Amino acid sequence: GDIDLLVDSASFQAFTDVAGDLGFKLALPPAGREAAGILHFFGLDDRTGLLIHLHVYQRLVIGLPWRTHYRLPLETALLATAQHRGSSSIFKTAAPELELIVSVLRLSLRHMLRDSLRRSQPGWLDGALNEVDRLEEQVTPDEVVAALRRYLPDVSVSLFFRCRDALQPGHAPWRRLVARTLLTNA
Image (tube, rainbow, N blue to C red; front, side, top):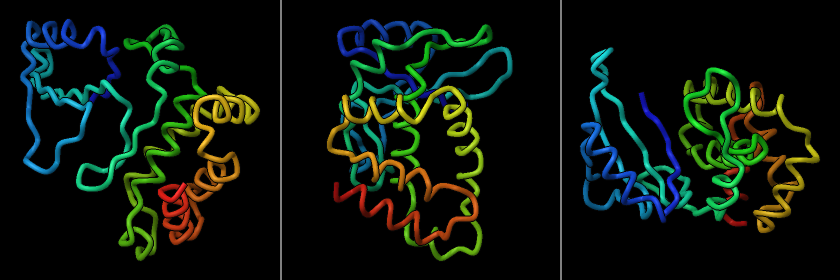
């Protein structure tokens, strides 16, 4: 169980104190794999005996640990729109259009050359697309466009939708790599 949490920087010390009180331990990544604004905590779920890994973000940073990271200046908007969505939600989540934007950009950056050489899409993409599909059911394209223009004007609407289309099952793997390249050059 990995859990990604964005914590307001003003509350970060209080969060780390509470995490420590709950038995979570700070885990430092190997030298050279650190990402500014991200901490990792591990704790044991006493009920299940499973290890829980918290990815705790002060700044919204996307990209694979061994690659270039990109900061998305969406922290304030994500936190401001966070609310419990659905009766079974444990965590507050941001507005679905913002979550969708982050998910599509994060997934687009995850593709590597070796993924484009495979005959089938990477296994990790299947589960991730379920989340993207779920988010798309909650928003209109106009809401996504408005959020992009307001919060990420450097990412063009056409580039965003090109990244989203490249993630579709059945699309040629090289399209994902092209979308990633265009995104990193935006």
